Length: 184
Image 1 (cartoon, rainbow, N blue to C red):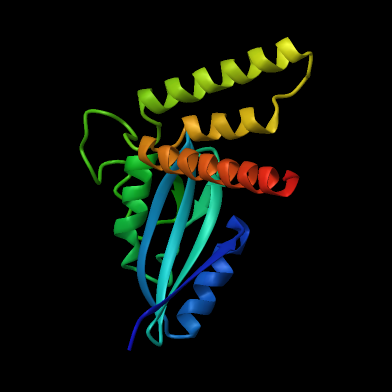
Image 2: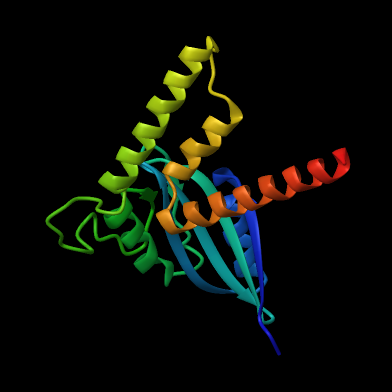
């Protein structure tokens, strides 16, 4: 039997009730992981297994200033993941049952996963400057949609950005061919 995956977006405030419901349902806690979205902005994904279905719950745009409640009152195994999210990303998780208080990992750099790479940051800044210059040149207050797309692509993984650009070019060629065929 194939395993099924679900992804649901929840609000940070809904996490304690979700944890309580998962415990009451007899769900098995699988993992918690954080993903860097931007400088000091993260998504946190909690995963539970129920009847061969992996259910994932994502809390978006978490910052170090926010307080994330621990789920270790219901799922003690989460203490490892919560300490890791704190030490590697700087996420403020409150009430961890076994709290290493920032010493789960001993590293020379604090919160090493909390920042985007210098190359990504430089690309994003360059794209923003280009978009601002184009908007100023055109006398507009905001960047054009193509500039917004280019700014987003500049912040992406280079391989993914190249694939998106290639797809956009193919789509534009297809539209141009269709327009030319229609005009004949």
